[in-house]
Length: 144
Image (cartoon, rainbow, N blue to C red):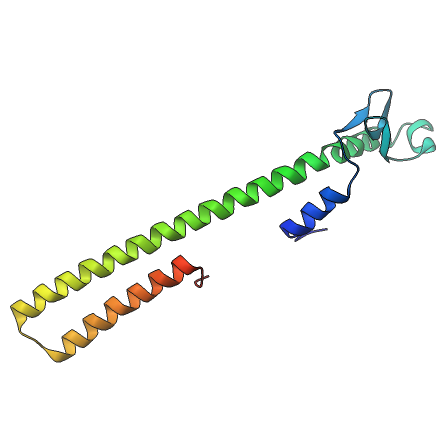
């Protein structure tokens, strides 16, 4: 199972046995939630015949017991990442807006000093408009 969405991870959590999952201290390959069994790793012969799989089965049980906490941590980390990404996009958009304002002011100064060259006015106006459009796209989530 890879590439699960947040909704799919949450659905797995919601459908799973409720309560804290833990390895049974008396049966180290069994995972329980309170008095309810969740999983048993390996089989009787795996764990007793020569012990070859006992360590692996116990490790599997510990991983299974940790799964709900790991899934919740994944959802929390994804939410934090989404928030950080949104904040970064907003900061970049604000920086672009400031750059457009500076460019517009400098263009006005240049036009006053150089005279009103129509081609220069067109290029500068187009640049300011492009920067502002890109900033708006970032703010609204349209840019990738």
